[in-house]
Length: 221
Image 1 (tube, rainbow, N blue to C red):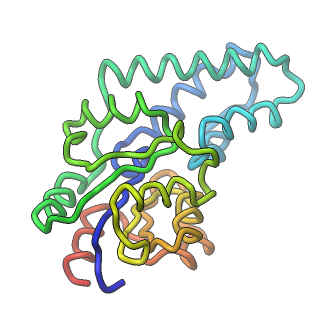
Image 2 (image 1 turned 135 degrees about the horizontal axis):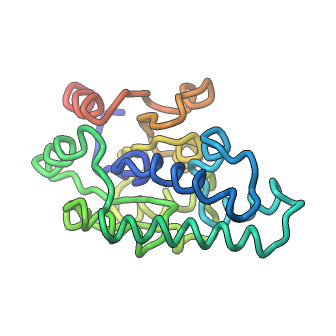
Image 3 (image 1 turned 30 degrees about the vertical axis):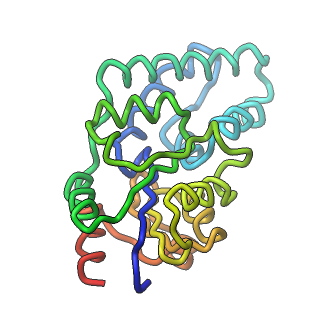
């Protein structure tokens, strides 16, 4: 990658340490709705999926339960999480502020491409004090196909007004890497809960431990 004209950030697990909150709430609430055996491994299977895909996955995985139980679990967990985010926000991941400060100094525009919904994105980024630093964002509400489909990446590139090959995507999930790869956008993976696998290593431009390491890579490219 010779030139970076714009950067796309995923949000959950990349900018913000939200995945652990989602996992904790889901595990706590699952028994209330008759969902047995829900644990961290179960949650890991949801990482990188859009809301619709997660909802559909519950119906498939817990086909023995009535629709009311699945809908209740989904609605209950989302309300609890949204309330917690509204009140407290979520912690920034290591290196976010340093990387964003450098990109601003270099006049490299930034956008967010997240499978989360619009209200959550705006609220969480505002709570973290970084909403105004982005040129804009693309939410899961605004695409027809969730990651690993490239649609959200393509819309983010259009929002930046950059060439795909001169755009850098930062992701923590395999589905995000797949989406970027198909869109022709170089992607750096910063693993959160799930480690990089062989497919991630094959399709990613690099795998870095945190955004501080990404910053050093960009500076020395």
